[in-house]
Length: 228
Ligand SMILES: *Cc1c(COP(=O)(O)O)cnc(C)c1O
Image (cartoon, rainbow, N blue to C red; front, top):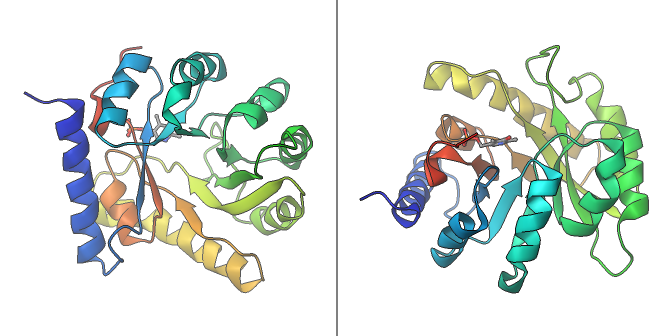
């Protein structure tokens, strides 16, 4: 029978094999379990299988689960889109935020991050395929936003995140991730201390690892198909 434990182990093995195949150090890619739409009891199965970092997209749903699982010392990543009226609760309850794409939102997160908490780890979302309906800055807008966000006192700019248009084969899947990696290297060359490329989901994480991902965000491959 497929359990969350067995699926998680499969993903771990695939990540390890892909790290090896592309000469990435073992353990250089972190698995973020994206648990949106999953119950706290389901998340607990993954916790019992050794998973500590979870991604959530919807604030209210996330807060219930964060409270229910507060005894487990988990690391919560906000992976959804961020509305201005939600920044305070996000800053208070999450340690990572993957979808920052506007200075106004970044500034609010910095101002609202509680003084007794470590700095918020932030990735800037890049709309790598320039899709009109998708969040994220363009590669052209990226350097200006990155430089500004890096100066906010309570944020720690860690790197970049993207959600490309789905592609059919491995070769094509690598292209947007290669572009994001190039942009990442340029920002590093301009003096920003970045260490995170948040890229790759259930259907394309091997391609993302081949192109330098350090965090892969995996939902379906761990939890099975999401119930709406
Ligand atoms: C839902 C989601 C994922 C996980 O997607 P799967 O295809 O289920 O692995 C990853 N990243 C973000 C931002 C998501 O919203």
